[in-house]
Every structure is written in C-alpha cells, then in structure tokens.
Amino acid sequence: KNEVEQSPQNLTAQEGEFITINCSYSVGISALHWLQQHPGGGIVSLFMLSSGKKKHGRLIATINIQEKHSSLHITASHPRDSAVYICAVPEKLTFGTGTRLTIIP
Amino acid sequence: DAGVIQSPRHEVTEMGQEVTLRCKPISGHNSLFWYRQTMMRGLELLIYFNNNVPIDDSGMPEDRFSAKMPNASFSTLKIQPSEPRDSAVYFCASSLRVNTEAFFGQGTRLTVV
Image (cartoon, rainbow over all chains, first blue to last red):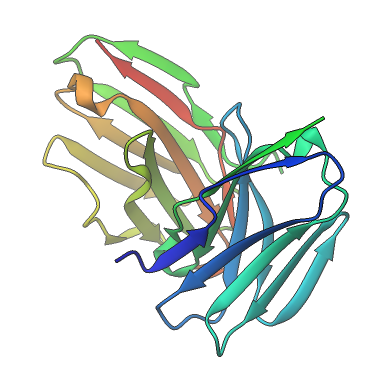
C-alpha cells in the first residue's frame, strides 16, 4: 500500500466547476506538499502546509494532520488548470499517484 | 535566483554509452533530490543528499547508477552503461533542508536507443 494515496486518479470537468482533489497519507508528518505538473513536464510547487488552510489565487489547500488528510480545491476552474496534481510527504518527498485534471472549455 | 538548473534538457544516447546528468541547486539549499519519472512508475526518488552527503540511495535501481555532490552547488547523476529501460525524465529538486518546500528543475529527458 502506498504511503500517500490520492483520489480521484483522473478528473474531467467543465470550465467554471469547483474542483476537489483528495490526498490521504499513512505516515506521521508535520507538513504536506502539493505540486503541479503541466503537460510540458515541469513540476511546480503549489503549497507546503502544516495546518489549516492556504490560499493562492483560485487554489485553496487544506490539511487535517490528525485525520491525515489534505484537499486541494480549485475555484472557477479554467482549461489552463489542466495538469497533474501531486501531493507529497516532505520526508524524502514520497509522492502520491497524482490526479490528472482535464478542464473542458 | 534562477531556480534549480538541470542540463542537458534532452539527451539521446546509444545503449552502452555513459550518460551524465547535471544539476545546480538553488543557492543556500542544503538538500538535493534526484528523481526519475516514467509512465509506468510515476515519480520515484533515486537518491537524496543533505549538506552534500548522500543520505538515502535505496532508490538507485542498480550499480549502473551513481550520484555525486562534490560541493553545495553541483550534483551529477551518472548511468554507465546505459540501457533502453533507463529512458525517462530525470528531475533534480532542492530544498532549504529536508522536510521543507522543494523546488524542481525542468528535468532531463533521456532516451537510450
């Protein structure tokens, strides 16, 4: 069993929809990392959070350390949000399986 | 800072040849990670360094792979001899220290024919 599990693995939505991607982990951590990988291949750090909520533009990340669960939300989704979203545990950067998001115009 | 810099961006080589991938971490970052990404296996950690010292190389697939970090501003990942199954995108990432936010290079796309 992976230490970091994401769901869903694939998600297709219409432009403007509210998107939620979930991440559960089995190891004890002090923080969690959300990454974005675009079709071109580059990996970008979105958030590193250890409690509560962080917001950056239309992206919101929440984490519950006790429940070992984090969510990434995208409001008013846009086709340019289409990418693979990956959650990672900082210790050695153990990655989740990724969620491939496709936003249809 | 220009971010994590990897070179080359693309490498095509023949089976059996030696391949060297290079990484320059962000200045001041003490942790450096090498990853391999394939369609089948996703992102896999190969090795990581802390203060230029290899801490965990359990992800290195076999003895054909080796990594060095001679100083705080440079690391190499070498494959000798290369095989077609080594074809992948290799990413380098650095962070201020272990367990802090990591920043990735653009990756090196390696094709072994």
